[in-house]
Length: 405
Image (tube, rainbow, N blue to C red; front, side):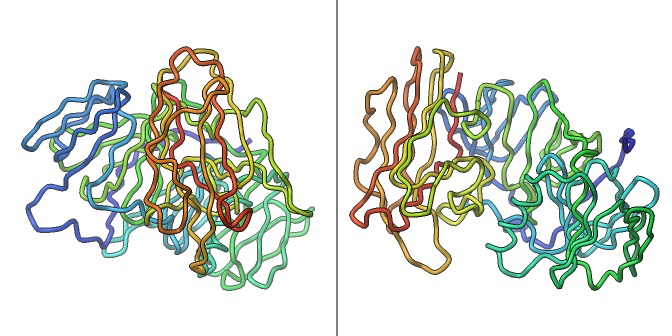
């Protein structure tokens, strides 16, 4: 098995992004377990995830209460479009000059200033050297490569061919692979990606609360610990034990997991009912749209949520263990500009609950925020019904669908 080891590194993400007016601290909006939304400059974060926000109405968010922190006025960025590393736990970071030395991948990050980094090969799912320019194709490939099972490493050529074996080398000119005892070198400019064996991958399973930070350059990084004492730099340790120093001005969002919130996409539904059309079947998608693309809504690209198609319903067992259900709901955004329609309902123990709007969703609808009391409830059911256009593009994204204790 590939060794992991402990990495103790300092990461300065040099991203060419303007934080706004010079000297003005960025404002963040928090979402807490009790439904409050305090906002202000990032002042402090302790190693137990207690958050301090400043401004005209300073706020202290107790440890365990923070669900998500969002940069005010900023959409969540797409994942990187350039050469990148996809980690086995779903993280991603754009990189330059990847090289394999032993069991570690060495690379550089940053645009204006390059910073050398390294990570164990076992922490990675994909070394993506040449992602396609089309964002939908990137999204489909990313989902396929990060969810499929692979016994061996696979070098995927730009012409569509593949070579399977054991990756034994990677440098600026070529990748080397051992294919059943036959060693071969493949020129780098012919390679689209190297998808690594999932049998050798290490996927951390944290037992306590952890965070995921989304950065201005599209990076997603999961954090075992994080703290900030000066309002300038987030000092953190990833789930792979890499130490990071991240400028607060590059932080677009910080999600907290394994705390009071449980995301529906991490649960197994108790039942699903859907109407297929011809040969088309539309099961629910976890952390993706029902089309298998990224979860997009109102200009942002989200990591967590469900994709459902009309007409369908999906049910989850609650066992009386939660207090609130919340989500942000809207139609899947189509790149061709075409729109469909749908109606959504939420049933608690089989009974519909009133929502902020009962109008059908269309391409012109604003995202529908949902927050419902489910205290003591045994079941939660999400329903997508036909709109005026029937099943045509009735694809609904349930963004950040989560249960809160």
